[in-house]
Figure 1: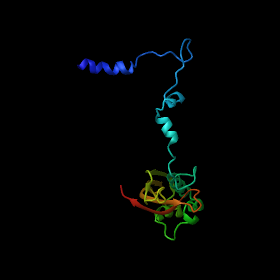
Figure 2: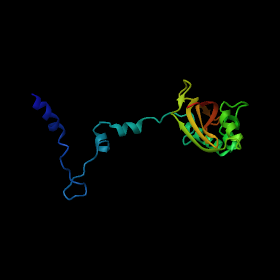
Figure 3: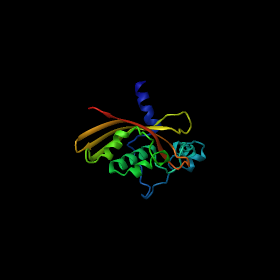
Figure 4: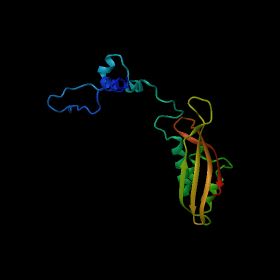
Length: 183
């Protein structure tokens, strides 16, 4: 009985070591791969056909707009370069709030003689939906930042919250919470 169970898959599915002639070889017959018109004509849908029929994932911003993580990375890179105008453009309304919750990072940029940023490493995680809307209109990007300064390394941890711009053209930073971390 065991032998019959072991041989049954080989009889039904064929052997994986069976040689098939190349389609260009003389005497080779062209066969339609699964998922093509021949397979669809028999009424058997496959993963490719189903994927083509599936709706695109919902997004709160225009197609082709930078994702949340890219917006945060561009903001942090602008801060590291000392380009506060470009950094502020990432925030809602084109400027930070009166008291940005990532002020510890902005202070680094504002005092280059004391703590010049030599390098900046950003580790971002997958954005988290912070509302129940479909598609989500409030996203949070967790971050870990390591700034190498003339005075030594500084580590920070926190998050940036983003929302769609008023015109839906992309994401903008709505709020932040970034704090120093001791190693």
